Length: 517
Image (cartoon, rainbow, N blue to C red):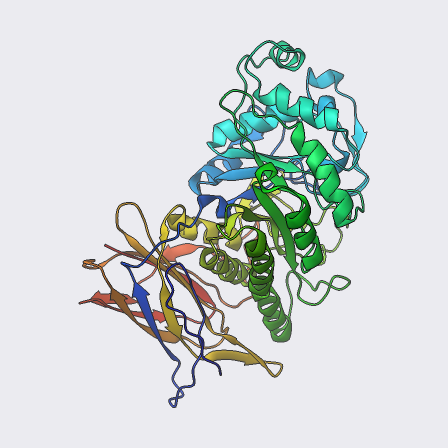
């Protein structure tokens, strides 16, 4: 058992203290009038790479498909993504970004050259989903595009002209080419990544080499008219703190707006990631434990950034995160197709609560990935489509987008296994622009229900106006094409509120969000 307490505004925490009684209980305080920081909606960003069946045979079916579509993108996917209010969408990669040459993906589709996707499965792609298709999709979804430019195999000129092609509203060769390809007015693009994983698949660079290249590339990524780029430097791999320090030291602050961080959760290790289904209780514990490790990474990278940027002008951009398991048997190992269980929903809730807690520095995050790849929102099979348990977490948690983070205090028992322990309850609270308070709770304990007594201070809220739950028969429960609603969002009846006291009976292995008005 352990105790952690922090009442500073803008922080969330998990705290564990011993209880004499064998009954699982927890105490909590929400300070509804002390919020300072805003939970940036872009923490709920998505990621669509040219990888496996994410784009082709996923969201993109082409305009001639029998599957109902809008400009070649599946209507059911568009509707599902609109429902969860995705704030931004990252594309075209990932590792793929540093071998993607954007001019191959514009113009008449039947004249576009084919390419081999050497990173993911060695398949041949016809470039039918390119710049216009992606940006038109973002407009359809009402989401902001996040484009990752090619530093690894592309030139400064190529990246510079891509920015001009997309955003310049005037007379220029690139603007003329865009108009010839059917788009008169430029698009608005704010988020621009200058390379991806350049310590690895993006060129195997040293941090010093990347910083020097970044300054060159970023110089020529211009702001045209009213379009102002939010430039994101390719940050460290997991715990490479030297990479972060070198970038902060060698790239002038005015040349970048954020630094990326990538972190994937495995049940075991990089060489043996564990299975998406059929895992045992020890694997479940290790997976949640590994997911929670991202908090240490955020804190340590933030401490380095604080030395150079104490005003926190730069954002920490966690633009690849989520669970990565062994691929499903019989599928292309380069496609990274995996099932998605209640374990992944709990993992997502714990991760999002951590991002909320550190929203003074974490300004964006992009779960990997949106369709048919890794910890996906959506899985497709021909005309069929299912929503994963992780999708339902993003649906439940959308109430926190752009809300004010509320400081909380939690005391709970531990979930123990393998001689180690984790706080059984992960929590987050926020207040939206209309004054509604939302409290999200995750009980990671797969066997024990927990009764939470929560004092809500500094509010005139009168009652529980809404409450939702995500749970399942066990942590291995998943949605299949035959049974697509094994794990879903449902109404929750286990919350009571009176005179500033909220009582919640949260079942084992579940996520709950409660609204107070």
